[in-house]
Image (cartoon, rainbow, N blue to C red; front, side, top):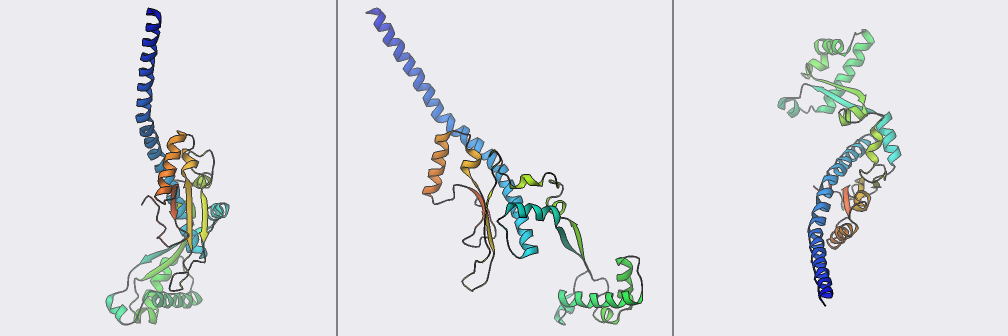
Length: 252
């Protein structure tokens, strides 16, 4: 009798301990999951922002977005970044007289062509100094000191300021913590507004399953279910292929 009572007491004690463990886990597991998710979200968001930068530049130069990540990488590695160096600005008086950037640049370009036919110059500084002092149209329009030069620089360096180079830029398309999975990319280059204006759109995505898949399975299921009930995308994404949103991320 005593032995059976001892067994019952031990069993009850073990049950209490197990219940305590389960209770602690029920509290700590979601907390641990959420902390890990928050840390990983930061890395995934950074990559999505970097992808957005690449897509925006691709669109700037090509007029469309690309869903092909390999083409996007090739563009970053081989295309130059074109930038306009600006010196001087038009005054209110010049603008009121009908002068604008386009007209001013045209006047300067014509002046440079004429000058180069007559003389050889050591560099652009010397060329501009000459036309500012001698070209009648430039002087007439008060464009002395006004200068616009298009230069070409390394695309990766210009966009990412040393964070990537040609040997490391490939990681921009890989979802962190995903065991090598690529970001999902879709484009809609034929979207038109209600006014009939064509507005190319893109969308880059990282599903929760891709970068949280090695964490607690039930917590991941719960997270996906919550987002679905709210009619949210189950992951992080930037841009939208169904409506213009200024290429915003769903965390912004």
